[in-house]
Image 1: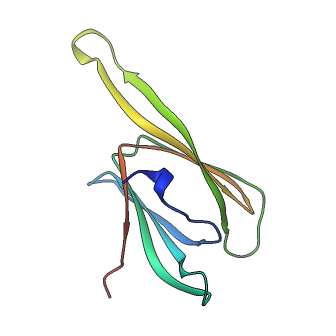
Image 2: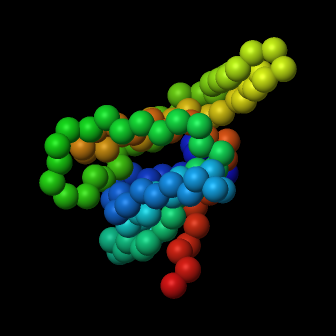
Length: 116
């Protein structure tokens, strides 16, 4: 999924969880599904093969609401040297909220309906 095709404005971040075994980060969102009728539903914004996730926000009471997601382009990261050299290319985005910013570097993302 191309993050630029997703409109998350006013979605509230309810929780963020990391799955270390399968290497993904899930944002559980109260997501706007029908603007005309002001309907919000639970959705999971999943980022796979995450190599960096950073939160820079002020002390905040309540659930952060997404204002904008800015695509910062692709980044190259490398680790090690010689035989142990490893390099990846990831997409880097900034999620701007009313509480501050979150930056994440990932391979792919998807918007999922949580199972009940």
